[in-house]
Length: 120
Image (cartoon, rainbow, N blue to C red; front, side, top):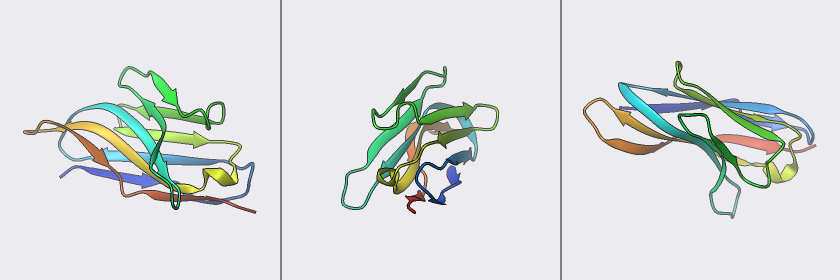
């Protein structure tokens, strides 16, 4: 079974930084798009940032210039560097990956989520 393990969430003051990581494991044949979504209480889940296997990125307008997504293909990991955090960034952040496992087709997988709280 594939696994997506997230880390790096926590409590930070406004203006601070956090770095989220997500590691994919299992009998992986290939990984395509990797991304981060977030869901705040009472709101719909929204795309924060995504990166293709070729390194092309896209960001939500609300995080452009503050967040940076990157990936390490050798380690099957994706990172989200979050700077100048604001209280409105508070949410559960989810890793999302298009992945092909041995003997299976391409599927979209979700991590378990990690809480990010921005508060003084």
